[in-house]
Image (cartoon, rainbow, N blue to C red; front, side, top):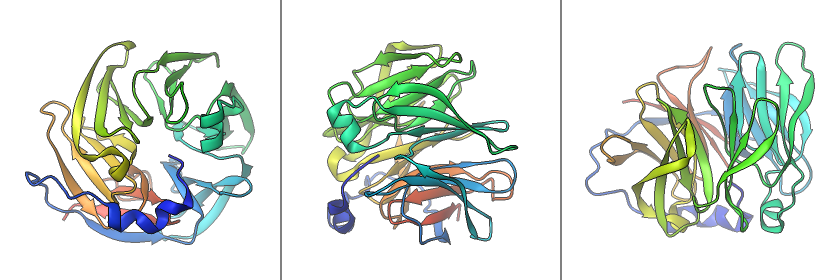
Length: 293
C-alpha cells in the first residue's frame, strides 16, 4: 500500500478498537532491524536472509536484505517504487511502479521483475502494469497482483508466458493478497467496510465470498497478508498498527498483535529465522518479530 506522510502522525489517534469478542492470546512483539525507509513487503530467500522492499517518497527505492541478527544489506539498488515480493526456488519476483500517482493516473509503467538469487541477474518478466502492489504465485505458476487506487483497481493475472490480463475489478481497493489451500485471498484498504474476499484459485474470476473484518476501512487500512500452512490468514492493518488472524472456514477473526505501527506486510519466518513466528514490515522503517506467547 502507498499512503502519504500525513498518516505517519495519525496512526495511534485513528486506530480502531479490537473486536470485543476477540479471544486471541496476544503475540509478543520485538524489533529485528530498524533504520530503513518505508518498507512495503518482505520475503525470505531460502539462503538465510530476509528480503524487504523499501520505497521512498523521493527517488528510487531498493530491495534490502536483513540477516537474522538484524544486519542490513542491499540486494538490488535503484528500484522504482517496489511492492510485492514472492520467491520460487532461486527466482525472486517483485513488482515495480507501485506508486499512488501511477494508480490514480492509470500510468502503466509498472513491471514484474525477477532476480536470480544465485547469479544476481535482474530481468523484466512482465510489463504494462498500473500500480502493481500485492503479489502472489499460484500452483500453476501464474502470478496475481493487486492494484488499490484508480478506476480500474482490482486483480491482474500475469501468466507464465508473461502476458497480462485483468481478472476482476469488483474487489474495491484491492491490496493484500495470499494463496493457500486452493483459495486466493484479497484484502481491501480504503473501502468503508473492511473485508477479505475469497476466490477460487483455479477460477479467480468466478464466484466469490466475503468475510467481514472488524474496523472501519480507512481507519484500519488493511495492507498485505499471508496464509499459514493450516489455511489461517494473517492480515496486517497499517493505520490500525495491528495484525489480525482470520479463520476462513468460520469467518471469525481476532487481533493477535498491536503496537506494530504502520505495519505493511507479514510472513512466517524462512530459513535462518523462526519459522513459527511472523515477521512484519512497517512504513516506519522497522522489521518486527511477532512470536506466540
